[in-house]
Image 1 (cartoon, one colour):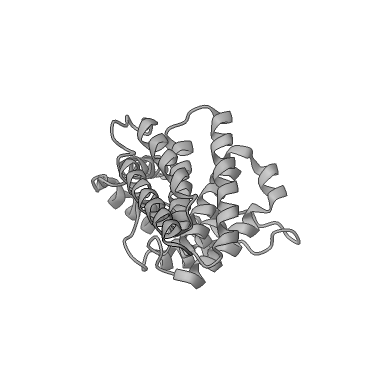
Image 2 (cartoon, rainbow, N blue to C red):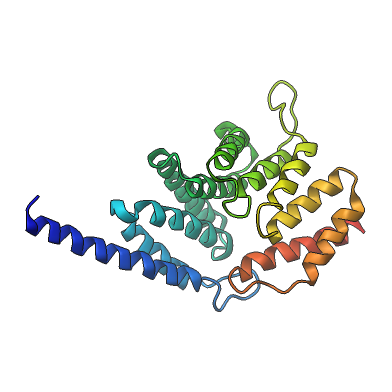
Length: 253
């Protein structure tokens, strides 16, 4: 490789590295100016633009790809109202995730954020589409892969995903016979021992406990969550979980 080509590659590496960092700055500002659960789209759209650019260079492709998945999830969940637009966004996130885990099968972040987008895709496309896609089995499979690769990623994200799919998937004899609420409790509790106890983990763990008949524990968890201030980094996400906690408490009382 001659010197000119080396210089060319170096310059582009620097440019794309700067692009990745710019995307991270926009992503960090994603909640600025949000009203309730509705976030402004400008910051997250700018983040997506920069991450799309950075994903084209091998040196930054994986990290930028993971941030793209995070950004598409946020855009679809908090910056978009129309259901058809949500479908487009989560379909895009699902496809990027499928491509990313194929290229980087040993990346726990790629598997985790693929599942986040897959779950959101299933929600907006509905039960029949999710069943045809085999979403429950995919969630279980990739959760187990995350645990194997890095059990502490996203504060026990693999255990959380595995617990969540056990909690939310229906038991159907001879078709979907593995979901178990007892296992949901087990894995969600395990997730909460891996790092920070996130608001999302708390809501799901409380739901599993309540379903298991441990109602006082479930209510106490949610009451404690509601009393805590919102995090600065995940303000909109935490607000969503706190509002769900309030709804559950009202429903259970």
